[in-house]
Length: 143
Image (cartoon, rainbow, N blue to C red; front, side):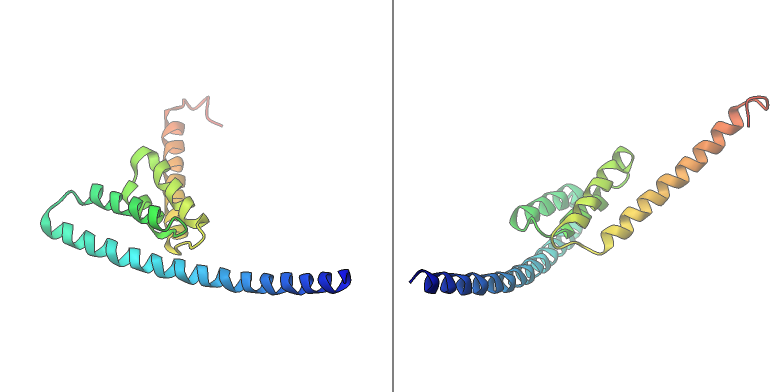
């Protein structure tokens, strides 16, 4: 009796494991569809607000946070929040949002390019700062 049950339980677990894998694929497709819906709704709201002359940045930020509350696994709203953050706080806020986007279950491809541009910009600023500092030093202190 026990061997029969154990064999059946083993088969049941294997079956559930396979279905779980299929369920994961369905969840991912659903998340991607939700992301597309969020994209469309956010774009429509943005264009509507541009025509109405409303403060679009604050409203867009609100919509992106609402999109994240509906579908937190979608990375696109994080990317858009990074874009809205611009260069505030020395790009730290934008960097945070781009990293969150990249780490999302359904990431957005453009976020890595946006993050690279921020790093390139920071490297360029650093090199300019080094040049300015070296000009300020007297010849005897330069090496």
